[in-house]
Length: 153
Image 1 (cartoon, rainbow, N blue to C red):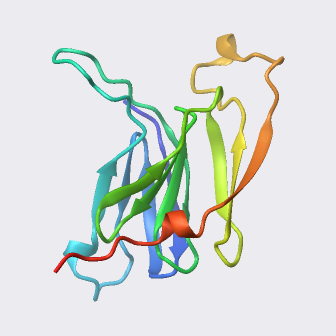
Image 2 (cartoon, helix red, strand yellow; image 1 turned 30 degrees about the vertical axis):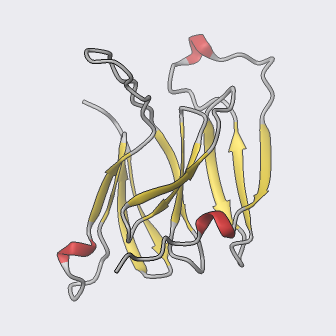
């Protein structure tokens, strides 16, 4: 049985309970919200290029909502961050893989800066910990990458 986190996240559109194992499940806490607003999506997985090839599934370590656009970012054990448009139910952008997992992320108050931390997340146990690898915090401009997709008519 996979062990994951369960916690509440405040987003511009309301409060969401979130469980994370290898996929994200978002459901607004509001009895007036329609069920179409519930959203579960798979993320942080390797790309399968040939039939019969196995797929690696990585832990989702953190999630952050953009403060003005309502889009979100996830980071994981695969060393990548992903930006998502939850309303259009699509991926907006993803990063190249870092040499270690991304363990945490957040946006500044205006949403112009995305910060993420790269360090060992212990998902592979103490046997794979390498003290020679340094921990880093990165800041990047993010506002344009997090704009929701325009809806097709």
